[in-house]
Amino acid sequence: LHILLKDFDRVCEKYGLRYYLICGSLLGAVRHGDLIPWDDDVDVAMPRKDFDILLRHAEEEWGNEKDIMFLNYNQMGNHAFLDYMTRIVYMKEEIPVNVFRKIRGKGRSDVDNHMPMDIYVLDNASDNELFHKFQTQFIRGLYGLAMGHRAYINPEDYANRDEQTQKIVKVLSGIGKHIPLSWILNCYEWVRKWNKNSKCENYFESNGFIYCIPWKFRKEWFGEGVRLPLGKEFRVRVPQNYEAFLRMHYGDFMQFPPMEARKPTHSVEASGIF
Image: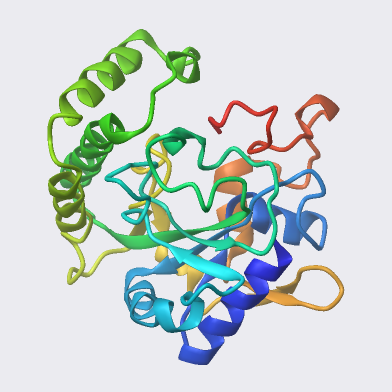
């Protein structure tokens, strides 16, 4: 994870791109001065403008069978869908992680059991609450349709969700498998950028986990970012007001979780739903 993050930082510095460590990775930097000891992923976020520039340089930086591969959500092979997430993947060694298990048997196999780093995209969130709800529900609906192009859907993954959610997943994925994935993803790209040229006070993570897509984040929290130590030899970029970001996610973020919760979420033992 350190290798992935350091190389991502190198590329962002090279092209003058803004990014921010977020979620549990940011929590680790603030609370532990490093990644959380029991964590097994790393998350960064980029504003749309910076992400679009990154896309233009991804092939030259992480292509041609290098140790690190750039993997966009539409590159899972054989018209397979995992999620909306863009990633870089460490290809030099295999590690037993469950990240790509939902395309096993249908999509590409070269990335299976390789450690990824997630790149969230910060798109403009409409200041009109009704429009924002419509846009994000549209994106979530497209996600449900695209799930029909996974290798399988395990109902047990959604057993802790309400009955309506379970029914929606079943219906949308059943319909989606009859719709070309390329059509669904083209529609998604169009919808997520509806506010690209609008002046908005908040971001939303347009490629986030399906339940988190409607969340809003104040742009002023991010700014130009600041650097915090991540381990002994590396300083990583984080949101300017990282405490506000962490309070939104975790409340009292300096409080350690109970011992039984201190375990990886993407490992072989994990459910894959987090």
